[in-house]
Length: 223
Image 1 (cartoon, one colour):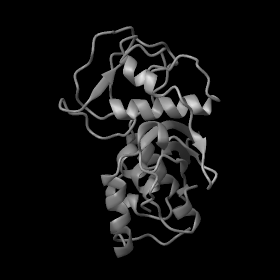
Image 2 (spheres, helix red, strand yellow):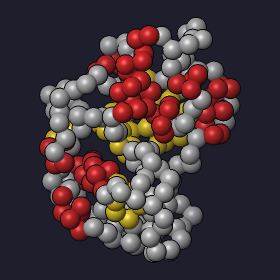
Image 3 (cartoon, rainbow, N blue to C red):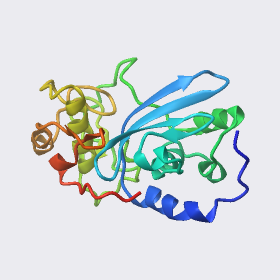
């Protein structure tokens, strides 16, 4: 295990600023491990449209190029701070104790899934709280879409388009109905958003699936 850091090292400040200032799109969260030492794997798109996997465990890690070189990457910091809302002194640690992991996941927002049946409340919910994909706060001035089929939850339009485009690519370009990220019901909403994700992503030179081209995202990397 790594030594406990009493304060964040100077080198981490710039990386952390990128983690909280850039927008990332959470595609899935999968809880694993066990009750004594819970873990979570978060699949997300980076700021250039590449899809990465962050594994929050005793040794938090990511499969992005920056992390693979041995650096603490912005994706891990983003997941710990924004998605899981870990205490600030845990975000910059290189290793976590089982007790710290238990505390993080006890406090973390629940993972949304369709099991148990979704309530058919088709009325649009108030535009408040966090977007379930980027985990940034929703504001009435933001461009949003909502699930008209079942749950009525709001999502940033850009976030929904990125999530749906990536899911379609992962399904081999299937034209099966796009689903709601929250309740998994077939999507009934903004038709322009659905039309925008008909194309599939491509595998880039680094081997990562990339969906930047569909949505006009720059592929210029900022580590």
